[in-house]
Image 1 (tube, one colour):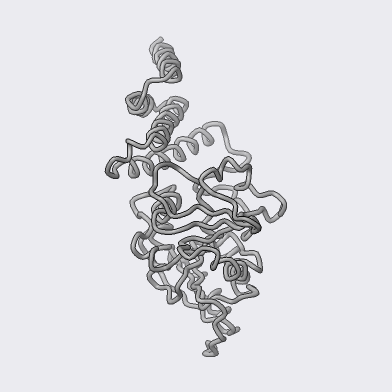
Image 2: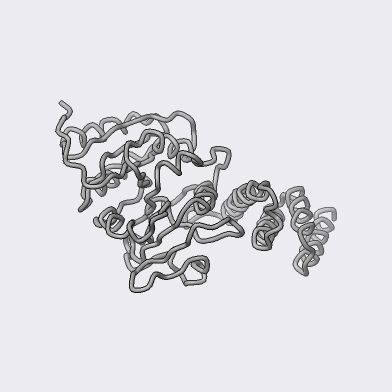
Length: 327
């Protein structure tokens, strides 16, 4: 029998776990939400794959009580659709996402409550991610050059990017560490036409609507899957790695092309340079993969944004490849 006990709400946050056929790790993610020092208002588990194993897992946690938990199913494929469903289902003033293979640090929401008053126009609060087996390693905290669009707050372990027009790429935190203003998220939502880099695009848009705070502390632990959207197994062949590089480059191109469609976007040098580099990267990956049509098409797109030495070198390499193919 499902418990009807409703605990006192600790913070006005709706936790949202999006899951896709990962019954083996889902309980770990749910447990990290329930184990917060400051409980969210509710937990919404969005099943994006219709996995029959998901329901009994969620039901078992519901029966324990202590936190309202809802299971909803989103049959529209893709993480963007699943996250959008979570945003629309949320009852809290904020939504905090967690991927099903990640876990929150125990003080994730407590830190959010402690720091949110530091920014009256807060739209996103986040922290770093660490590896399960190497907690001291923070892959997204490599160096401060990533944070050139952020300022460090005096006397606080916080970086802030103030609300500003988007004129060029800036660091975007992991969704598994992000707590987001629901009202603003509902105005924009994740772009479901983007099959990759949709989270970056989402954050870039929200950065025009309010401040982004990054707490200089790990807020989530992640364990890279052997094979996922942006990774391959260690034993993957060279061909598999090249194919993955091609896919990643494609997602980057599509996201930046969408940005460039905004009025006067290409008048900003940083956006123009980012798009040029994305086109060139996709062309290069296409050449390595033997996709010559992709290679020359996106070389041309990149060169049209400003011819550089690398474009001439690429063209010589392309011509040499074609000549070798014809022998």
